[in-house]
Amino acid sequence: MNTPASPEWKVESISLENLILDPQNPRLPPSVQEGDESDYIEYLMKSADVLELMGSIGSRGYFEGEPILVTKEGAKDGSYIVVEGNCRLTASKLLNEPDLAIKRKKTVTEIAEQATCKVSTLPCVVYETRDEILDYLGYRHVKGAHPWDALQKARYLEQLKRRLEKDFQGWELHKQLAKEIGSTPGYVAKLLSSLNLYHHIRAHDFFDTDLSEDDISFSLLSTSLSYTSICQYLGLENSSDVEAPNLKLENLGKLTSWLFEENKEGVTRLGESRNLKSLAAVVEHEQALEKFMKGESLEEAANWTSLPRETFHISVQETKNGLRRALEVIHRVTETSEDDIMELKEIQALLRGLHAQVKDKLPTDKDEFGELL
Image (tube, rainbow, N blue to C red):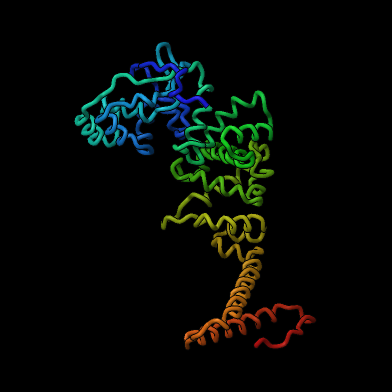
């Protein structure tokens, strides 16, 4: 793949005044994409290393070996949209105009005043269309040294999808997208499915909760689609159901609340992400789901599912394996202690109690195992 440093790429200097921040930047949430330049700058200052970039450019000047990638497409005459390099452009603008910052204006002003280098132009590589730059974005931010998070990757894939869907459809489209970013079709489809849900959550004003974009963990939303029962609860065929024609909006609203809405103690109904398995079991079980929706905790509701039985069997197997390992190595042990005896007596007592409860749950005609120990 060619890079901006390739000799056939022509680099030209363009005035800061003619460089426009990219409203389609995958870093941005929709509210910022729809806002003005001040919203954009404020968001980048919170989520990126803009202040550090200001200090670097202000003390050493702009490194010419990293030109900004721009396009005329969608820009007014004489202007260019910066598709790659928006943080560097923001830092350069703030060095010249500290008042562009809404918050942390004092810090921005101090950095600008201490700067020994200020730039009025930036080195740029100009493309006719945005699509010509998308491949490089994937190379740099998906497979390269400056990776995007899951939401940013999904937004990038959404843009790439628009370019490729004229030639590919369905699973072939997902395969092609996966090839572009060096991933799997299933992962690509799950990201796009999750992004579609994210768009619905925002379009429905977070389902009358107090949530905002900052409260939605896209990674958690995406991980939840790894569970078949959660997909089915939402009306999805599976995690690759990108278009989701049978999406159950009411259930998406409930899931949104369970995953992200916090109580006064700052805890969601889900709790930790590792509890997704329990939530998946609950939404699959009518009685458990009813208990959960009436206010029982996730742990309490999960007791109405098959999870307790699974946990019991797994725990018994793990205990058996542990005791077998102990028996296999005991002949090598040269010293034991009273603590060892106490531990074994406690295990013995636990086994008696557990055996009695298991025996009580057997059908009457199966009570043939006698006493344990």
